[in-house]
Length: 100
Image (cartoon, rainbow, N blue to C red; front, side, top):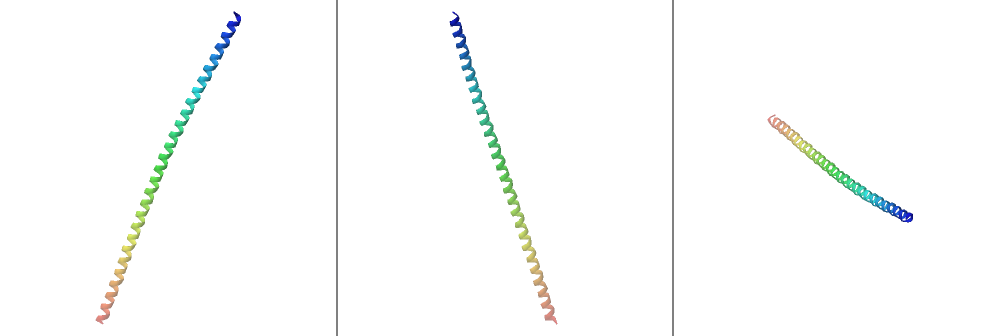
């Protein structure tokens, strides 16, 4: 009788250990899934952040190119006005010289 009780106790302990091992495995699996999900979210956030940074840099480059083009156009207009002014002064000087 005592032996039977001891075997029951041993069997209960063994079952409890198996249950504890299973619970630990489930907790570990859940932790791994949570960790993978967190890593995935962080990667998505990093990707979105990188895309936003690239878009901002591209926009800054586009604006800089547009500004450079405006400066070039302004310089061309200024140079053309200066050339026209020089040509006009030369014509006026020629006209004065013809009159003399």
